[in-house]
Amino acid sequence: LTTVLVPEGIDDATVRSKLLNDYNIEIGGGFGELRGKIWRIGLMGDSARGINVFAVLSALEVILSGLGYEVAFGASLAAAQRAVTA
Image (cartoon, rainbow, N blue to C red):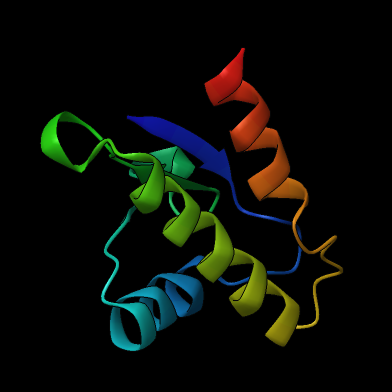
């Protein structure tokens, strides 16, 4: 399970809804004090494949950019790729 901070000014429910409806990707939101502040991304077991990680990262880049957040396209994918080859 990976925890990701929701960027300032971004509505976490909107992003999660777009991930599910547009990309068929489901991630969790935070609970209690962390509600609206984090995303919980579970890529474990059989789903812990590079292609799934890249799909989530790519979708997040497109969605966040569409919501007006400044995104360095490809930066998250490059970082994930470096982590895999390290």
